[in-house]
Length: 116
Image (cartoon, rainbow, N blue to C red; front, side, top):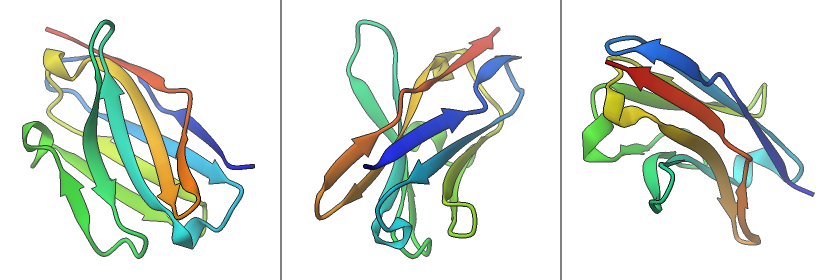
């Protein structure tokens, strides 16, 4: 059974930083494409960032380019999201996701709140 557990959320002021981490257990970590999504109450879940199986290629939605960095560690089976220069519009519940040929898996989410 694949499980994902996020941590690192919290409340910060605009301009601050947070580091989210997600531990992936079950399955073969090296087979997973990994990513982060976020969701505001009443809205759809939006893709934020992704990283390929090897960690070579990373992808970002335009609104976070230059501010967020996604990375993965095969030693720890984690996918991290470093967030800097945070803005109030970054406030959301952040989810990590792992996907392979068998399907897509999701964590429970961690809340990020950015105050102005």
